[in-house]
Amino acid sequence: VARRVIDVDQLAAQVRAGERAGLARAITLVESTRSDHRALAQQLLLKVSPDPGAVVSNRVGITGVPGVGKSTFIDALGMYLIGQGHRVAVLAVDPSSTLTGGSILGDKTRMERLSVQRDAFIRPSPTAGTLGGVAKATRETIVLLEAAGYDVILVETVGVGQSEVTVANMVDAFCFLTLARTGDQLQGIKKGVLELADLVAVNKADGRYELEAKAAARELQGAMRLVHPRDSLWRPPVLTMSGLNGTGLDTFWDTVLTHRRVLTEAGEFAEKRRRQQVDWTWTMVHDSLLRRLSDNPNVKALRATVEQQIHDGTMTPALAAEEILRAFDERT
Ligand code: GDP
Image 1: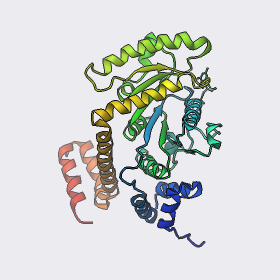
Image 2: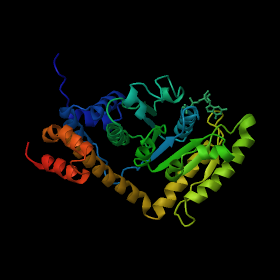
Image 3: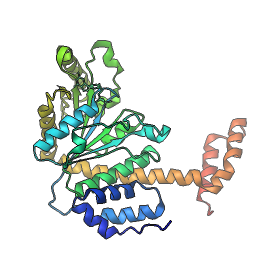
Image 4: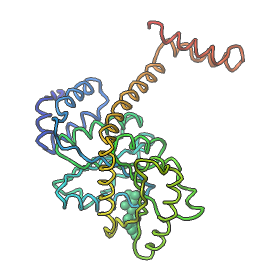
């Protein structure tokens, strides 16, 4: 089979022109783990990097357990935003797909209304590789989508392992969707996610659940006050909404915009993005070093013996660590 030659200049032009097919090919390229593809992907990313003064998108993360109503909500929010003249992209970070090959966020046709819109682009989670690999592909996909003119980027995830932290570190505003929970049930919510959230929304606040949802929101607001000190620049509000009948979508989006304005006025918005870029760089360095360490033939050769010596008590862990690092530093 003849390998198709990838013309990076042409691909960059197609992405900038917002051509769907070209954009999809470009995303496939940044998702690829082949080393020649990775090099081309980086060339492509340089070519599409934004002009100074370009519109700065809104990057919004959305998390919540399966069944909380994420896809229903994103479908409704996306339609609402398109109605306001935005172009909306939806990405997913689903680490379950990298572990099991299956996925929690699912392959079923989700977001039925949004998926057929000309001003929407929906991309499922990359399925290959580690969470680190998925995160890298997703971040690079965000750059492509912005170059293609999508000014709202919604990144959806489920709270598996580190996925919430990963997504919170690539968005401007991180939103936690939950269901009406009060009293002891509140304990079931991971404290970590309350620390990460810029906005909490009690979803399915409709019909017979509405009052319950309002009560839950008040209680959650109390819990949030404990997590976020009074003098924080932004104290995350707890809203109620219904993705199903669309109530609260406007308040949700207004809150995202207010959060952005507050951060911008304090000089924190651009700073947050810069910090994310630098953190991401070091994350990649760390990931790559770890991979080299475990792939290193000297280290591999030593491993079983050293572990046995530790087990037998003839070597201390600290000495073992030194020996492993010495082997790593030796030329292979
Ligand atoms: P996801 O797994 O978080 O993406 O959740 P889905 O959007 O697939 O929704 C799970 C179920 O909850 C579906 O049966 C939806 O119809 C229902 N649902 C979603 N949003 C709402 C809502 O706002 N109110 C009510 N009452 N049901 C909802």
